[in-house]
Length: 460
Image (cartoon, rainbow, N blue to C red; front, side, top):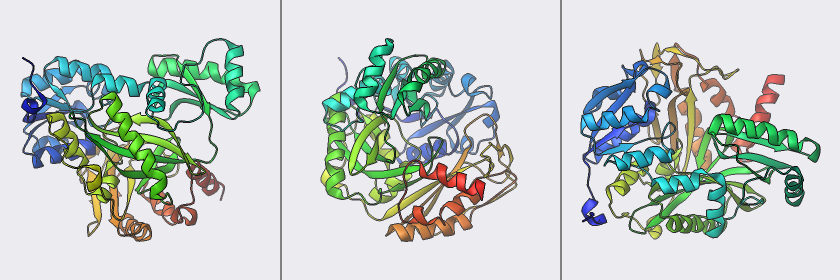
C-alpha cells in the first residue's frame, strides 16, 4: 500500500544539495538545524568550495562547465544514490524549475524538495500559468491566455485589441530573456520573428504570447508556502523594481507605499491559486504594479535569491519550511500567525566591473564583512577563494533589517561602507552610490528607473 502523508513525514534524513555558492551554504545550514545530513556536490572548478568541508559527503560530479556538472541530471542522481541521500534540494537556477528533473528525482525513489513536476510544468509555461491564475481570480496583464498564432492578420488584430505598446514574450521564457517591446504596428512582425527565434534557441519552443506593455510599473512579489495537506499562507510582499537588463540588483520588504487593504486580496488570491493546482513548498508570484492595480506576470516555483528580506520581516525560516513541506509535515502556521515587522533590504554583491558590469574572475585577496544588529551576509567566499568564470557572478548577499525603511537604508549604507573585497572587481561602489540616490530613498522608482539612472551617470 502507498504511504500516507502522515507516514511520509520525516521520510528522509539526508539531503543532496544540487547547487553551489551562497545558496548551497544557506541550504546546508537549514538542514543542519533540522538535524539532517547533507551531501554537497561540485564541479572541477568548485573542488575547494568551503561548504564541501562542512557537508557529511562531498562529491565531484563533472567538469567545470555547468552543462556537464550542475545541469547533468544523471550525474546528480548517481551522486544521490552513492551518498545515500533521500532527497534533493535544487536551490535556485540550474535545475530548480525543471519539471523533467523533478519527475526523474521522484521516479528514482527520492524526494524533490520543491513542487511536483506537474505544478512546475503548469507554472513554467507562461500561457498555462496565466490561464490558471485567471481561473483563481489573480489579476493578470491585459492580453489573451493563448499562444500567438502564425497568421499575421490575426496577430495584428490581437495587438490592436490590447492597444500599443505591447510586449512579446516567450511562453517558456524567464530571467529576462525572450521578450521584446513593440511600440507601434509597423515593427510588430519583425519583433515577432526575432522573438520566435530567440525563444527557439533559448527555450526549445517558438511559442509566444502578447500582453499590454505597462510603461511605469513596479515589480512586486508575493511569497507563499504550502504543504501537502491543503494548507497555504502568504508571507507579505517584496519590491524588486531596482533592475538592470531585467536582472534584480536590490530587493526590499515590504514594498513601500502599498496599503494593506490593496495587497491583502491579491495575497489571498495567490493562496487560492496554489490550492487549486495542488502546489507544495515555497513559491513566488511576480506582479507588475501600476496606478494602484496588480498584474500577474509569472510564478517562480522555487526558492528565490531574495528570500532573506521576507525571512527578516516575517521571522519565518523559508528554507526550513520548504524542507519540512517536502518531508510531509503540516505547515506550522496559519495566515493569522503571519506578521511582518520592520523593513529589510538585500543587495546582490557581484564579481563584476562596477562600470561595465563585465564579470570579474580571480582570487579574493582580502575580505572584510560587516557585522552588528540587523545585518546578515549570505556568502560562500573567503580570503583566498578563487572566483570562477564559469558561473553567475553573484558572490554574496548583504541583508539588513531595521524598524523603518529610512533606518534600514541608513543601516545598509553603513554595511556597504564596511564591506571590503579585494583581488577582484565588485559592484560595491555602484551599490553605495545607489543608496545615496534621492528618488530611490523616497521610494519613487519603477522597473525602468535604474537603467535611466545609469545612463545619466555615464553621461555625467
